[in-house]
Image (tube, rainbow, N blue to C red):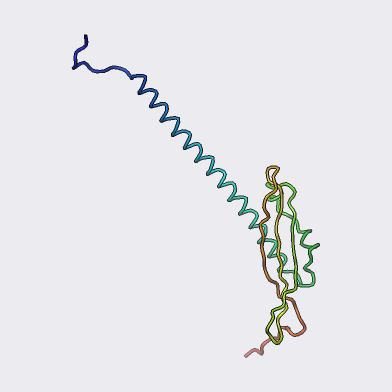
Length: 150
C-alpha cells in the first residue's frame, strides 16, 4: 500500500487528454484568426490598388479637354503593371453625361464622369469599384482673363 504522504509521479491519462484538447482548440482558434487576417489584408491591398488606379485615371481624364473625354478614350487607358499582374482581364467601365443644374439663369455646364474597374481575381469576377467625379465643360462665356498687374 501507498502512504498518503507519497508524491504523485507522472500524468494521468485524463490530464493528458484535457491538455491535448485545450491545445487543439487554441490551435484551431489561432489558425482561423490568422487565416481571417490574411484574407482581410489581401482584400484591403486589392481594394487599395484599385482605388489608386481609379485616382490615376481621374487625374489623366481631368487633364483632357472636355470634348476629348469619351467612353472609347477612357476604355483605352492602360492599366499599371501591378494591376495587370494582380487581376485577370481588367477593363474600364465608364459613363459620361452632360449635367445641367436647374434653377439658375445661366447654369454652368458640367460633365459627370463615372469610371469603374471590372476584372477577374482568382478566376472569380470581382464587384466593380466606382469613382464618380465632375469636369467643368468649357463654354463660350468662361474665358480666362488676366488681371491688370499693379
